[in-house]
Image (cartoon, rainbow, N blue to C red; front, side, top):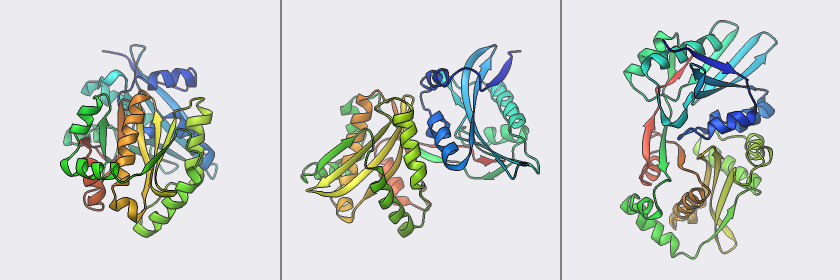
Length: 319
């Protein structure tokens, strides 16, 4: 029998980042930059776990821990564990790992654990989590992954016909694109994000968390390609803007905004198409386009699926 364990908070952040870069589809919420930003915003303490089999790392998992009222523990593990080199372990190894996670994130009156495992939806994984002592409390996460390892011609050909047509229209509209790899104008975008959140009735990321995450990605990470913000300008007037965060060899779409004119002239498509090119040139191999919900936001879902990406759904939210 292989020896499976999780080594918590061993090694350096550099060691973690090196392993994180080996995950083909890493998630923003499992990055140390996200954990650090959550700590500064809400008091969470990131706990970094390296999953090992016979002493060799095979995966990673980050939990965010917070003590409340000196007695109560709140533990989160969202969109993990992640597996190195694209090798998903066998069912026995998976079960052992989640039993270890149950032990690390116990559920009792003084300790609450919230998990959103990065496992595909399906009865087998639901049964696995139930055997490990987790209780399902909500649906999984649905998103669209874009493969940026394809050449530009293949990515363009993968776009839906109407998507390509609207993109051509935007390319002819005379829009100018501002590409900012430090997201210096992020407070401006957050103001528009909060305005549209009020109009559409969704919960937006807070401005301080977004800025701290940008700082952790760019300044704290010591890199110049951790945050990408692209704005389409119609003359001097912003028509659309999109923010992406890079983590490992992947990136995540975080915030997008468009004016009424920008929605009509296809500016958002032009911004996303340029982002795909920019991220690819910087070595990003996969782009997580963010959540989709066909029932609540069918237009957004159709837009993201029109990129030719792969729709995925995780197993659910658990305690």
